[in-house]
Length: 344
Ligand code: KG4
Ligand code: ZN
Image (cartoon, rainbow, N blue to C red):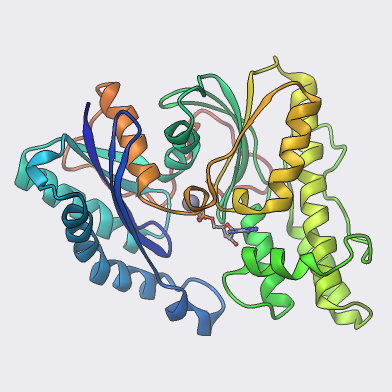
């Protein structure tokens, strides 16, 4: 049994966790920065990096205190090395390097997306490779075939905005506040999903990819028309996103070998309506549906520690001069898609 310390700082959550190779989450801590970014309506990279620098070391001390453990008790140190806001990534990665240097324990540089992609296996011991993964976060919207640790085949990606980004922009447009995803979901609960006619970009397309930019423009027009309430727009928007996700998944499911499990991960996986649709879709396709608990969907360090545990078990560790990477695709062989240059 190995104990892994995980560190996460790629966006606006600073987090540390201790997780074992037999799926025990010994301690996990998280410090959000929402109040610092709220006045700007989005994450400000420089403010995020400074907050990570303040919070990371106290969080590491806190997880060790909670666990009654010391640095010498860990077997490896896993830190997010990208993709993400580079100033923040460097705080976690350099902290990880310093702890690895001081303890003589191996460093494991984790791809944040791999943290999300493997997180369902932390809570579900029966989830075996390969599985079909919908990865929906603030920076990404992809369908991947997860063949094993470090073995990801990208089947679809967004050609413009990520799904979570669309939620965040819609929330900002509607004045629903920050962070956007949960605010849109809440407003949608009291709205009519059929009230506002909105497009389903790329639905029915022969390419497998996603697009959300047109949806955002349509939300802007609906909002400016003054014809609709924010709740109805939110509900109609959420329904449009869900329809797009379902359409693109069906496109892939019709064309690929059947896999035993449909898995969702990333911040948007915290959305109840998205989860309900996926559950239904998995049922129709005779697949098992696996979704991590809500706290494990949004950014956290337990998923980084777990990805570290999986990599440690596979004998994968990294030299101390490994760089932080602002862009780092999970499938390095996937070809760029039209318009998607900015979304690694
Ligand atoms: O995975 P995550 O915490 O950070 C990234 O790696 O991007 O995902 C954050 C994204 C944000 O865009 C946020 O608005 C979205 O996930 N999100 C949600 C919900 N909770 C978080 N989107 C829709 N409904 C939610 N309940
Ligand atoms: Zn994330």
